[in-house]
Length: 281
Image (cartoon, rainbow, N blue to C red; front, side, top):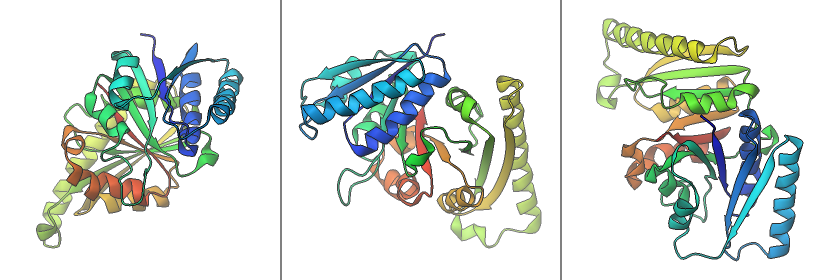
């Protein structure tokens, strides 16, 4: 199945950084072109926009990719316009940014990127760039595993897109325990929880090895018992010098502003590295 990458570009400096990811991912999957969609918002002059798009086109050219540009008029409903402009389906991937639009606002909660993730009409990857120097090619990627029964099925397409850049894959399974019970866990109970988490991670690693074949990257597995999975993700990301954390977006997070402000928003706000929030249809 041919994969088509669409880049929702708003003309901001953050979107310029995300463009590196969009171009790199298109190159990684050997796409013939990258489709850029910009809805005029008045924040960027026509002259500035021409310069920025010319730069992205030059990046594409360096990867033997054609840049297809769609410049759309200002819209009262940007999300609806993007959903109409980007083809629905499992072979379509939309790359967009995750950034705080103003003081006190979330990086994802209430944004167009959140609405695109929630719509689930195509595969979506919203990226918060902390280190522009990675140039969209992180060598060390970390996937926190939520324990889904289908394991890595939803994450696999996104991993495969990063494969040509990848040197190390870090898998983290956090076995979450209620704060009131966490301090009273017995040794026997803790060991049983860790064994269950380790078994899940090892099965996931075997699944990844089957799908990626003879790839040269290394895999590290980490299993933790914690009452605070945000803290564990951030600590390990710094410890192993992760370049990119990839987090799956579930309905529970996408439908609730509370969960974003208390969990994913904490990671996006405090992260020491780039973060990608992905969702497969």
